[in-house]
Image (cartoon, rainbow over all chains, first blue to last red; front, side, top):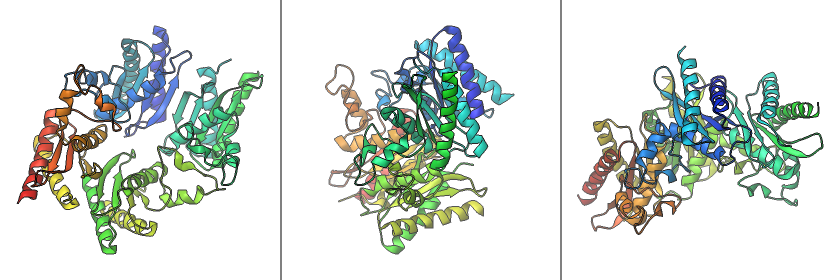
Length: 138
Length: 138
Length: 138
Length: 138
């Protein structure tokens, strides 16, 4: 099953709602199964430099079917994946990218968020991922 | 004045409505005053390769404050801007990118559309631009 | 349905067989539904510069769900898609890239071939596409 | 002597067999004497992001005629090759890339593998390198 634009819009709406609640303007991106951009928005006053980071977080999460922060744990100096970020045209390996799974548990998309602290980014991405999961499984 | 996400969403909604009316799934992008991506969506079944073209059309229209097709007239063999498309990381110089002006006539954003014939692309971009102009001027 | 490595290997074997028959060493690439590289081989003595062209032909065919040569008809000077090749990190718009469809007629992959004249490239790509179609539909 | 496609295929078959034995779908790449891509395959369900890493591991191993993990020891903070990974369009400096030598001990190719832990990647690359060495020396 592929992700549709409708469910991507539903997912981003939930993420934006969380961003508004915590008062941080965000860049939010969703990529499809092939890691290709499907939907993107930059909220008013959000950092310009976070546009590319949000897209790269979404791609990174789909490239490896894991949360971006997990890769960052392994890419530190002295760790197994040191400097993996130079691959694939640039990976982002800190939190804010989360794979999106269908009800069979298969990754079919990913969300990436950037604009605040990594904690805030993660919270907003997780709100999107939750909305996606509920939509997919009901 | 800057373009807000709200008016960009309003603009894309009008463009998507036209795309649905003519039955062609499109990629639609809006860039802001700085030619930076603000909003993007890929409709279900739209060409994967049109994602980049839609974004480049929007950027091209804002880079030169003119419709993308105008540049294409000048970039033909023997004409003054021959091969200008290799600049700026890649320009698209055929129709489908339109600058968006505020009521003072100043370009503050641009829309780019790709997914069908250049005639269809233009029609969808123009529908977005019309909605933008009405919103801005009322 | 996704293309499997097994069917991609079957497809490339048929293409290589045709390349051997006509005596031209080729570069042959297959991309999946998301236009991501799945399988690639360069035959002995094939042009080094055709490696990138074969991959770009496969991507281009999937990006627009059409044979690459069709795009080239529209990208000539004075035609609607002039200079479209600068998009998507570089398109190849002459023959040798063919989309691969499942039995429902949906494009799920593409093959790209480069190494000889465009006529030879096309013949080898078509041999691969034929083998793919027979495998898929039997 | 140059590596032939036939021996590259023999090498990748041995690597794939090991990947199947340990149950990890891998991306596997072989580059030739000029560090140019010769053969590549992505096994079903292998990470999309490992495609580029496998190719970069093979290139890195040939660029410096050493196992990729050796470079990683020298590229840590405070070490002589700190940040060398940004060169050559991106190097990968953790295990999984191994140079391939002919019976005179000259490097004529390299294999790169990515898709699991670096230990798994190395094991699969080593299985390919072993098969290559036996083929070359018998």
